[in-house]
Length: 97
Image (tube, rainbow, N blue to C red; front, side, top):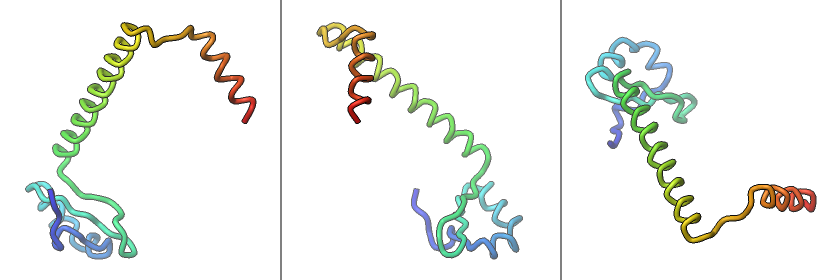
């Protein structure tokens, strides 16, 4: 979703018009509030924020599933090593740094 010039609001203007901006956000608009000319915070509908959080959780779960698949593939193709030996090797490498 792109932003228009009307979606970018300076903090001083946001303070003066918070109720109107909140109504616009509730109606589906996303507002970027700036401070000193830089992006500072966003104003969005709470339900949309909840939806974004759910999407992020789903993305994390998909990444974990990919990691498990890679691990199982590594086991299947014998690309593994003993955990104690791996930790010992990592500790030796860390000492060299």
